[in-house]
Length: 114
Image 1 (tube, rainbow, N blue to C red):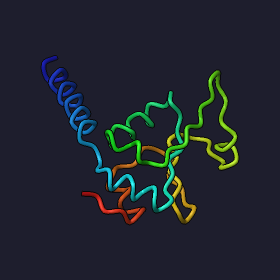
Image 2 (cartoon, rainbow, N blue to C red):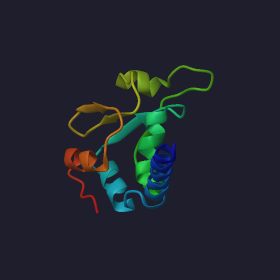
Image 3 (cartoon, helix red, strand yellow):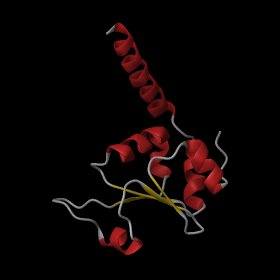
């Protein structure tokens, strides 16, 4: 029981520290400048985890909210063929579905992770 509690406490602390620091503003801006987009939904737990990796810098990410009030999906997301969240779309048109590490985003985009 103590071990489980300690692991849970460490996980919460790690998420808190990441959300406080997160990725740099410059990294998030670079993703946007390189044409990288994240499609997501406000109810999606993986999207929430992805946003936490950026902390306060997430506001610099080109994020497209796909969820409509009462269900359904925004037309822009339908047009882009988004069926899962989060979906990352890169400048060359390639896609990755699911939460990506900042390191993966750096490799895929060419943006330097500080």
